[in-house]
Length: 196
Image (cartoon, rainbow, N blue to C red; front, side, top):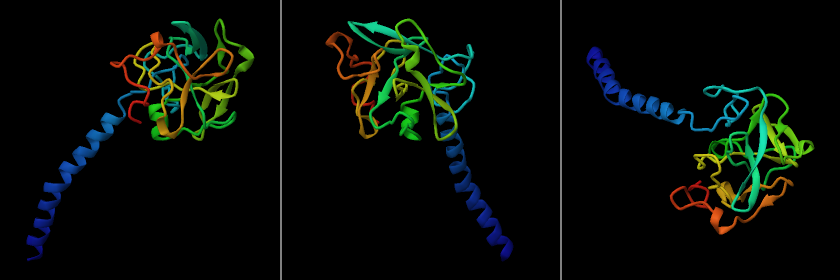
């Protein structure tokens, strides 16, 4: 009788447990698909310290880009950089799901500034996981996961995770509005933070 009960338990465990385990493995594989943009330092922009494909130089460079009359900070490949209003000069308030949607710009060495960037405004802060996040004029810098190419500004003005996100001007100020011509297109996202 005990062998029959044990056999039935094993059968039920296999019947229900294996599909659940397979679903969990599939979900984990999908969530680690490298969706975070890479920085010029060769580390993941999510700040996890992992190497990005085709890692580059050891220095993270902050540049500027002008689009339709608005000049804002980018990384060396032209990807837009943002600030989040709840952050302080020494602490990022964005972690977990927030840092997945808004990956921090990280660096292993001191960041450098391209033309139009004030080098003395560049710095780093320590994140809760120990990685160094690049800051500019006291603002920790982030990418937006909804920007899929250089020059896109789909995160501008969004209210993701309960507070506004803005592009950063070369003077270190938040850019609270873009000209109509440079606003994100409806096919590339909206100013709602991509549903976050």
